[in-house]
View 1 (cartoon, rainbow, N blue to C red):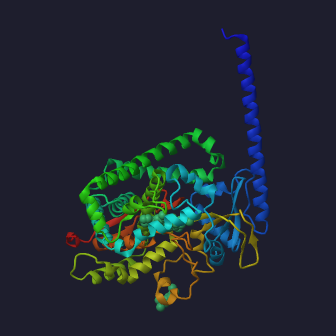
View 2: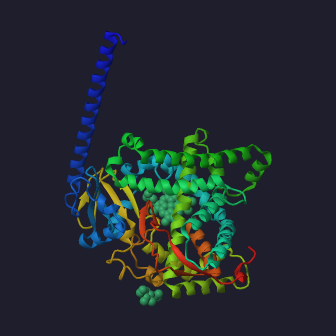
Length: 513
Ligand code: HEM
Ligand SMILES: *[C@@H]1O[C@H](CO)[C@@H](O)[C@H](O)[C@H]1NC(C)=O
């Protein structure tokens, strides 16, 4: 039996608690409504596509081919339009070079409404950080991408690529098309782990594979969360099955990065390793992070260290995977360009069997094709900011501080006012003559301004080496029965993979690298 006075207390406590929850809920709703009013007022000089009373534009964005839906809106609304995810989060969606420049040439912070969803996973690393701490980390890590550091990576890219291509020899013999995306993904992770994290020569282990799968889950869940306003609140999200799945995948990702850090720290205990590092003229990414000291001489905290490792582990492989896969798809679609690239790299290589650093600048036609595939299939199709001061656009319209901006790189790259016949694959757009007069914000696969991609050079080098080797060993053609379905999942993916037919160009092209 519960004594009378106790049950009374429990009752009273229950009443208090529900009262408190009601008040907090009310305050939250009031806050959201006020914010909504503010965002609406800020954007009232910009048109909006028809909106759903509850979902805003989220339903259109959830459809397959939603990227092309946005492109169709850009025809209707020149420069910019409102884009609402539910009723409380509204962006100005921009896809015009001058508009992009007005915002992205400054260093405004990332939009917390989007990037905070990353926190549980990659923490406050370079991608999410802002202010002086971002600046400090950016300065710290930039030497990790110095060309002396990048040079030896050419051989590492080749090694990982050949492991993938050997696997493809087997698959190609079956005379069926297959999905190249996952194999490219594992290769890109393998090469990143070797270059940036000093992994040894073995292929991917079980933990790496688990990590690879976890990332595809995490990007899917994060995109879904972004598009579902009912998931925006942390407290609610962690209670849902999707939220718990997100947390489980984070755990897998963290187990992986923790191991990478642990192994490197253990290696540093070893005297010989230390000597080796001190002899290096340029330190690699992990050396820099572990050796970093601020003015007061203290090391990076464990949380900062892990955030950077998590950030680079993700940004460094998922993006290039998308880039390489869509590039090969473009080559399969346009055999005449494929053949021209192949002839260029064959000629460049002559009777040598390895690529050198100096070769990378001579792959002219291949580079033009890579850029054209980045234009049509940008690996990072959309990035977001929150203004920390007002902005004036070229046409006289403006936005106040606090406004949210979505830069739609995909739509910008298909903007007919900038790119004549935007849907046509034409690498000559990127010939030196044709590039010189172009607006610097017309083509920005790596974003632009102070928050652009720190790994841009690394990525371009990887793209060139990997694709050149692919073209030397195989001929690629499309599978008309399984065309890829473009899907935004933070990066550009295909809903059904990228299925290609591969024809081996003969074992002779497998040289000893
Ligand atoms: C084709 C490959 C790649 C593409 C298209 C790409 C694209 C981008 C874009 C668009 C941004 C801006 C993101 C934003 O504003 O939210 C960015 C930032 C970033 N990228 Fe890349 N990226 C690629 C490869 C890489 C690689 C290989 C690395 C690392 C090894 C990397 C590391 C980063 C980091 C750390 C940032 C945040 C930089 C900062 O805010 O200071 N990326 N990337
Ligand atoms: C410039 O682009 C146009 C259209 O793509 C092309 O016909 C022309 O040959 C290009 N010019 C050069 C010098 O590549």
